[in-house]
Structures are given as C-alpha cells and as structure tokens.
Length: 424
Image (cartoon, rainbow, N blue to C red; front, top):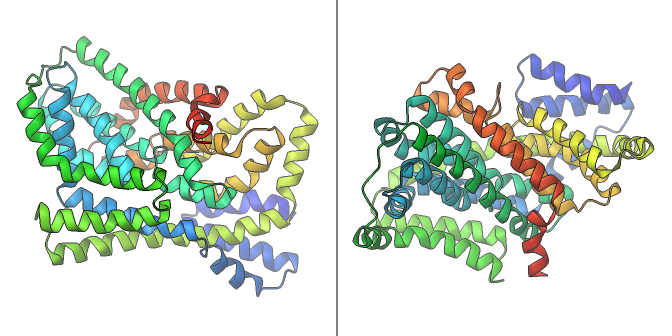
C-alpha cells in the first residue's frame, strides 16, 4: 500500500495545486506516520538534505546570474556576439543561441537566461522580420541550454543526489550543450533563408574590436569560472562565490550600471528564488530517504533486470519517463524525486552515472519548453505577453531538434564522456 502512495499521493496533491515542496513533504510525512517510523527522523533528514557542500553553489550562481543580467554584463556579451555574426542572414537568431550558451555558462539558470537574453534581443528579432512567435519560441528554447552547460544548477543537484563528482559532470555537459546549440543554429539559418530575413550590418573588424574591448570585463567571468575550476585553482562551489564578487565589482565599479539600492533588490530577488529551490530540496530529502528505505529502487532494478530488456530499451523507457516528468516539474524537483529511482537502474545496466547525468539534464532541458507546462514557456508568456498556444506551435521545431540530439547523446556515450576521459 505504501508503495502505491509514493506515486498516487504526489499526483493527487499536484492536481490540488499544492506547491512542489509541500507535495513532497506532505507525502513523506503521511507515509512516515502510516509506516510507524519514528517522527523524529524527519528533522534529521530534512536538515541533513541541505547539509551538502556543493549545494552552497546554488545561491551564489543564482545571485551572480541576477547581477549579470541587470548590471550590464549580459548586455555587453550579446553586443559582442552580434558584432561577430553580423552580415549573415539569420545573424540575430544565431546571436540569440550563442548568447544563451554564454549566459547559461555564466549563470546556470534557464529562466534567468530567458529573461536576460530575451529582454535584450526580442525587440531586435521582432523588428527584423523574424515574427513574434518565432522570436519568443527561440528565446524560450535556447534558454533551456543552461540546464546542460556548466555551471548548471540542475547538475549540481544531480551530483549531490547521485553522489558523483561535480567537476566531472560539468565537463561531460560541455560537448552535448555545444552540439545542441549547433543543431539549433543550423535550423535558424535555414529558416532565415526561407523567410528571406533581412541581413544585418556586415562584420567589421573595428566593430568586433570595439565590442570586445567593451565586453572584455564581462567575458572575464567565463574565464574565471572555467579557468578556476578546470585549472584546479578552486572548486565549483568556490567558483560560484568568486563569480558573485567579480560580477559585483564589474557591474558596480567598472560598468557603473547598478547602485547599492539596486544590489539590495537583486540580492532579495536571488534569495527568494534560492529559498524556493532549497525548500524543494529539503522536502525531497524526506521523500527520497523514505523511497530508498522502502526498497522500491532495488525492486525496480530487479524488475527491469527480470525483463532482460537491455540498456537500449531501458534507456528509451527512462527517457520517456524523464521527458514526461520534466514537462510538469521544475528540474530540481524532478531530479530529487527520480534520481534515487533511476540511477540504480542505470548502474545495473552498466551505464555510467556521469553519462546518465547528462541524459537526465538533456531530458529536463527539453521539459523546460515542452507543452503543456514547460517553465520557459510560462516565463516567455509573462515577459512578452504572447498567447501560450502560439508559443506551443513555435517550439515544435526545437522539440524535434532536441529530441534528435537526445537520442544521439543517449546512445553515443562518447559525446558526453570524451572530455571526462580526456581529463583523466
């Protein structure tokens, strides 16, 4: 009976409209009380789930992303990208994808990426013949890359939950994220040629030089984060704190685009988002602990092993489950609920937990713009006041592209594992 409650009760509570953290906590408490487990364990598990060192990176990366978006750093990154790709038919769409990749590598937040890049590029896309629906859909979909490209907040949570090296997991996400960006870029170039989108100003070395000079301090953020992590100077968690200090110094004293009151408002906004995520982590800690102690993950592994379906079919089934769940739940909640179930299954099939972590992230990134409840769709709807049904139609080509990429990443492990193997 308790095994059924693990699935049925969360669904019922979600339908009733309870917040995710309450869904997880209520389910855990109800099962706890009906199973006769001492209630005192809740306190230990609840706070223990927040005691992981890598989780410290989450509030710092969220705060760094907010400062970059509002402190002139994101704006200069976008201008720099446009200066490089100018003169190509479809250059503004290319700049949107490239800017999302770069800003995602600086902030780790998908919705933050949509807000920062969309705020800067939507008017230009709309006014240059791309159309509202194409522009909004492109921004919503390309922003999802932040779930995959390091320093992804979703990957931090997966690394903690699956007890894997965060640095190795970050490394594994680099090539898949770039591959998806290249595939989307190929599509927008074809679209721009078919629609005969106007060509922007040609690339000129003097424009690139001026944009590079203006964006030099902004680009330094990427160098600090990645150079520090992969150079062995500091951990990903320490990199998050350094990124905050660096972005404050650049936004306040170099670009002078935020004041101390602005910084206070940005900190409060980041704290609000951090609280929402960590509440989910705490609630999921109780749920995951009870799930593990119930023996369900081991029973699931035994069941799949008995099916003798093999890794190909098993991965296909898990992709379907992850896509379905990812289209309803935010990545942190989906990871904390499903990772304790899916990782043992993957390991039983001799699938690397690092490779599986990338598969997990790609599924959840697709879920960010998958109808009906993709979070980026709602963010774009609120930002640009476009009917959700129009966005649904606009994201279909990107769904197809990302699903093709997902199949490649799933069944060609070297795409994810090439860099980690090289670093070994």
